[in-house]
Length: 99
Image (cartoon, rainbow, N blue to C red; front, side, top):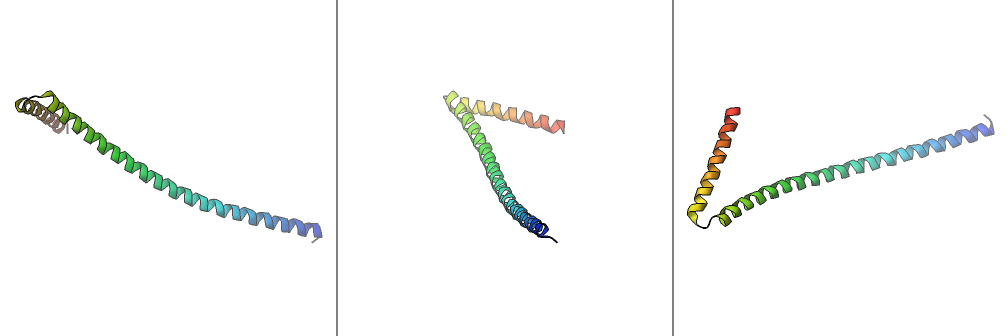
């Protein structure tokens, strides 16, 4: 081999090592990013679940407030609550019939 060929071969080896090092660092970064993504997805899932629970609590509170604010006496509140229970029962029966 000539001197020029040796230099080219050495240069090629150096570049191959550089590419391999770059590949290794990119693999590590990919692993880290996947881990971060899983963590963020978990946080998002927890936030969505908490939001759903808060919405349910809010709806329940709103309904309770409506019942207490709209009804001055206990008898009126009982009537409204009974009506709501009957509506829920109707919905449940409709659901049972459709299955």
